[in-house]
Image (cartoon, rainbow, N blue to C red; front, side, top):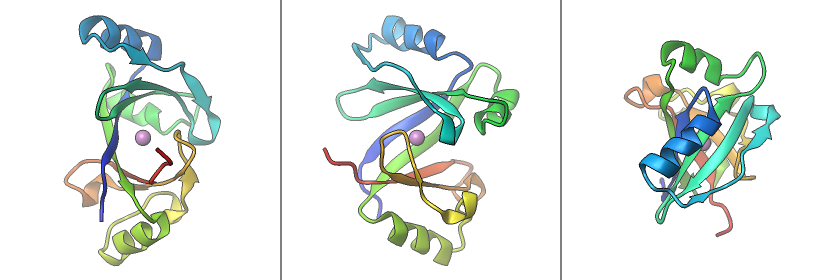
Length: 138
Ligand code: CO
């Protein structure tokens, strides 16, 4: 069912500090401008890699879902991984049919890439928060 790995989500208390890390420590050369995604309560920045992306996410607002993660991981850390799927609603229905908990009532939201996404609770996926996103137009 899953397709290519689209990105790895990394939570950070400071996108600016993380940009410096990926640029100066790892030598990343393609880092996009950060932008706010208020509907998701995050500020986002993409680090482009030859085969994937790192999605840096910083809390935005007082009810950001990233705040609880940073409370447990103050320095930030790996937050989720995202796979592409050909049909987001079919993927949602399949996950529910297999007993997984799809967050936010299973209603797809427009994610940082401008296509619908859902999140599968980490308790059903070996402790890893899974994002499934509709295949973007490449
Ligand atoms: Co993501």
